Length: 460
Figure 1 (spheres, rainbow, N blue to C red):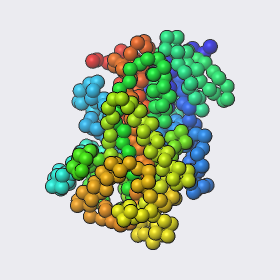
Figure 2: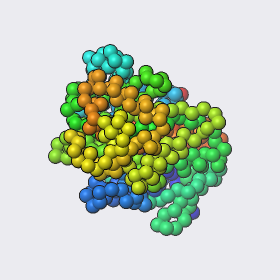
Figure 3: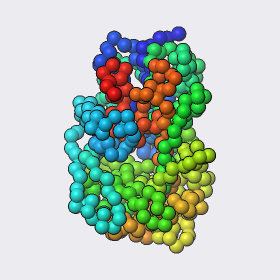
Figure 4: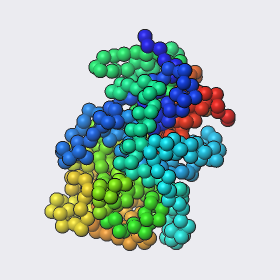
């Protein structure tokens, strides 16, 4: 049986940062990354490549999984803040979290990322407050879907000179006492043993990780689940905000239910895209640095946050079921509806979309979101769109497009100490898929943190 010093399960940004630092601080160590998706160079979505118009549910979703993780084809938004984007401040001071985020940014710059930043704008924040809208502020870097891809390629090329990387290696189990990892590789069941095991499963691997924790009786605490839509409208509507801060990250808590609905993941002149999470299709957004690849629209997520209490403990499945219902209604794809049609209580049709002033950037199925989205979340989204219209007139126009479903589910967090799992000596977890982070920047920082812990450079 193969023996390694350290095995990292998952090749997303968290796993890569962990491997990068470990391979430099412990050059004598034998390290391996096991990634269930393809290599970054082999990741090609048929829709983006222009081969098909709609998702064909590839066995390995090029957008969601593979080396560099789901962040590889995101718009590369890097938020330099401890105020949001994860729960790392639960483990250390916000100052220390920021320091690790900056360290990770330095690594990315070494491999091609630029240093351009957008800064907070108190004038825009004041405008929001006048309408009971609350804008979170931070320094933001927009790497761009294209520039982010090349940066990740360079980082991986460097890492693989010191670390073994196996792609299309689907981990099925880890013996928590013997540290034997069982995985499927090239259609064969394989095993290897590692002194240290690091789970870095990412969003696409969260179900596997949670099942493993439950099987091994590791206590899990559920995080929130966000369900909503991707909003698409003309670039000019939010130009005043995006040109000054790039990402307006705004939440609204007023309204009938008092729930928090948040606007985030803004993509200036971007594209709405489909994601395949274990055969459930959801939507997201991308945007490019290259002006030739930009659209005439901007898009953003508008999601309603829900925290469940006992006895219900399956928030991820709740969100997946809503998305799956939308897929069923649309004949196996995702829906798009004009805001005006939603307000008038009618479905959108192809003919209405063709007459719309907003041209969709995703070939979605015209339909009716009210048939699949719970009333509470839909009411919150409608109220928030009207509130946002006060600071960016045109947001609640008849032709504003709503795509569904967009979900952000955050894995249940395992009981641990300094990211070492409870009663699992030598087994660690990090990143989005383990419930510690929910952003590119904090996932990257988390990878560096765990590497420092393993190198005995960590202080509580």
